[in-house]
Length: 99
Image (tube, rainbow, N blue to C red; front, side, top):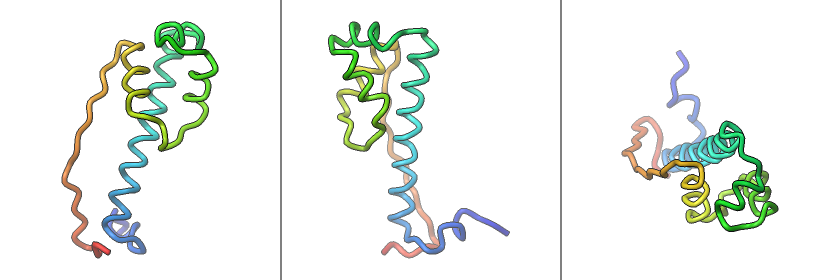
């Protein structure tokens, strides 16, 4: 039977937690970009709301990196009528070594 634990058997628990957190960031980024389109806002109109340039919006949308500042994410979300909510959860993988 395939389980989450044996899928990641070659990884340790810390690597799995890190991977899950990174995946969460990529999902958040995608939702923000999709929300702009769903609001039928152009990059320029969103830039105006954020008091930044359209190329800055384009860079954010097209460079999904972990280096994006938290403030950028919060401002982008607020301009779309959204709030960012951060949370942490206990993530234990008893069948994987910690390191």
